[in-house]
Length: 71
Figure 1 (tube, rainbow, N blue to C red):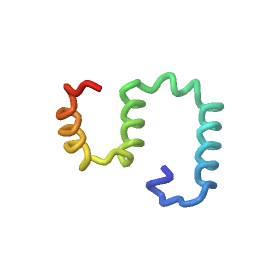
Figure 2 (figure 1 turned 90 degrees about the vertical axis):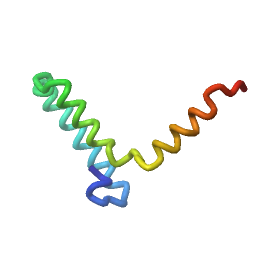
Figure 3 (figure 1 turned 120 degrees about the vertical axis):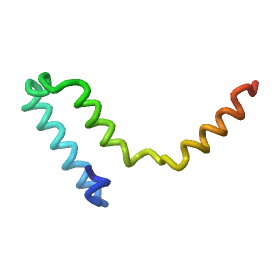
Figure 4 (figure 1 turned 60 degrees about the vertical axis):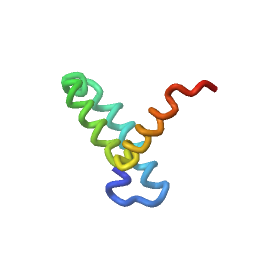
């Protein structure tokens, strides 16, 4: 949420933390009825911007080159 809205101060993290705590305190019973697949989709979309997809092929090649290396 903070990265999408361009928040650049620690106050954004504090606001987000308070919002999460309030949601957990008052809406926990309602979360029971949300399917796990929907919750997984929410988490996946939240971390989508944290993954650099341009680096995945490079890391794949590097890891396969050193797969049989004995340290």
